Amino acid sequence: MSKIAKVNLRNGLLFVLPWLAGFAAFSLLPFLLSLYYSFTTYDVVSSPVWVGLDNFVQLFKDPLFWKSITNTMYYTLFSVPLGIVFGVALALLLNMKVKGMALYRTIFYLPSIVPVVASSVLWLWLFDPQFGLINGLLDAIGIAGPGWLVDPAWSKPALIVMGLWGVGGAMIIYLAGLQDIPQEMYESAQIDGAVWWQKIVYITLPMLSPVIFFNLIMGLIGSFQYFTQAYIITSGGPNDSTLFYSLYLYKNAFSYFHMGYASAMAWILFLLIMAVTLLVFKSSARWVFYGGER
Image 1 (cartoon, one colour):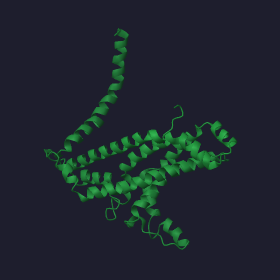
Image 2 (tube, helix red, strand yellow):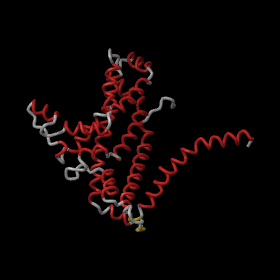
Image 3 (tube, helix red, strand yellow):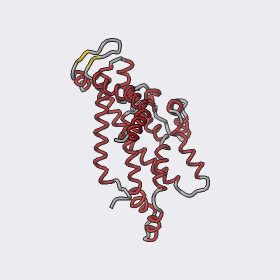
Image 4 (tube, helix red, strand yellow):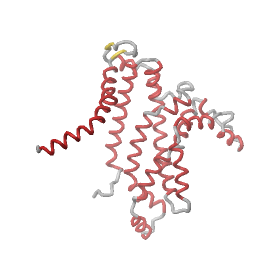
């Protein structure tokens, strides 16, 4: 290695050193410590005590652990597909050549940048069964509104509806993907006599599939870690109907100070997300189309 190359390597390492130090201190070290704590009993104020696999054994005997998984799976199975459908449909509408479209795009995107705490408080008022706007509108047309967030049967659907309000972030990505589709393909389909739905099925969706794949992965990861809205609005109630996995993990760690138990939960969540992500990646070869492929 020449002297100039050595100097460049040294300077490069010096520039990247602050990031490496931050990564080691705030990401890598907590990652490794959580693995160690998952095999211990640790309450923060006392020294951790090695218990082996006891935390994992207790988890599988914990009814709230299974309840939190069930709630999270319910939310994932409905919120992720609905988010994709609504995001793509909204992007298709906002991709039309209509006067003032820039304003419409801005309006639909704004909810995704509203702080989560503020939007949660807003929806808490909207979902109020007695004085909320939603039930007020339903009453005006003669429909008795449900209890929403105070009813175990409606609490998760209410949070799913709330999540659809912020679909604008994904919509922007879909919109960018739509504008990248060559117009010649639509023109050729038009000449061949294709109608609008055939263009969507045979051109738009295949060409948009990489973007759908990306949002599917991000949506799955986000739904498995769903926490903030449930913590602010319901704190897991009523009757543990919104006790999502991440919320139960948080309670074990910072309410009950069962850090070892919470670390074991974190590693199970990590393995679950990895398994689902790998499964989706494996299936992508069947339905994701890349324009450069032959």
